[in-house]
Length: 131
Image 1 (cartoon, rainbow, N blue to C red):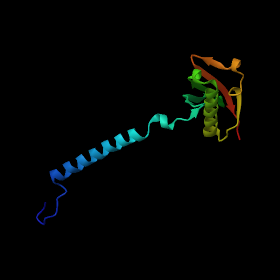
Image 2: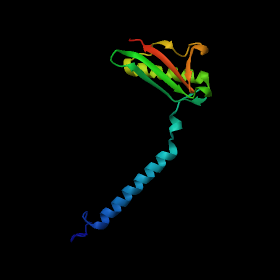
Image 3: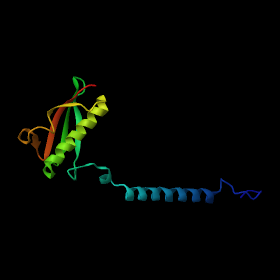
Image 4: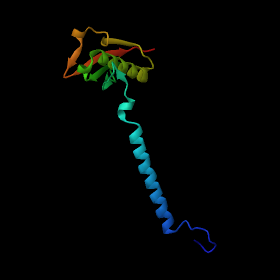
């Protein structure tokens, strides 16, 4: 406190208290966030199962509209994996070109015997149609 009885902001105990409070709030925030939202809560299920899938351009410079989608865990459900691949391809085309129209070379409608499946991974190939 200073001479007038007002708490001093420069006092050592004041800053220790603030640091302890900030630390406690940080820990509380982390614990709460970890307890309420887990990565599996954000996943979209296909045929009742989560699939890891990734879409990427084949060659951004030569043919930016051509892409592939790799879906992991096909053995869990072929139908679910197909839909997960369709979803990732659609997301890719919307983000890159603003359209959900896709010309699939190998895709969700391909006959099972013609699908590219190896090591429990399925690969689709398609071209985003420009709007």
